Image (cartoon, rainbow over all chains, first blue to last red; front, side, top):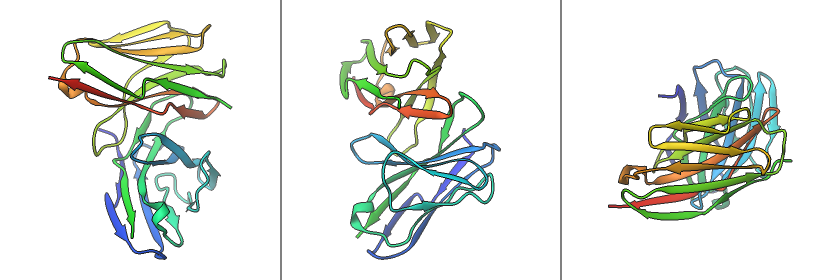
Length: 112
Length: 110
């Protein structure tokens, strides 16, 4: 079982609210990722980090921001949630080089 | 950048039959090719992977083949069971960059 955790699992929130999705891993991995997954399955990379104080934007434009102050923690923040942000958000981490990525169980976000 | 194409997007088979999912990629420098299975309500989980110096790898009912010249790799599931029903993703890895295919929804009918 992977040691990567996401909270909350489900979140329903009103438009305009600020939210933070939490992701933590205890494997000491340097690389961490955030993916957005719509019901159509495809995984869209929205943010990634290669280590502490490193953050990059992914392929899919996103209004969210991330931070990496500690190796184990990679939170994603939406300053003002909108219905278009409704989706599933998956966090992942991997060790050095070409190795397996471990995924959290995801946060299903609904903005009403 | 790398472009990974995965086919088919949906696949329905009868229990006991084989299932094959194919992926092509564009960057010849890619050197690691994992396959992930995502069950309902969960995150994707690695089921098998192959590196560029190997042409085939097998783990019980699951096998992966890689053709580096043609830049394609495939997942083979034999003797499918209803619990194989899930979404499957291929991926490629090159220079710190992992790219996923669009996914295949496999349904195994009892």
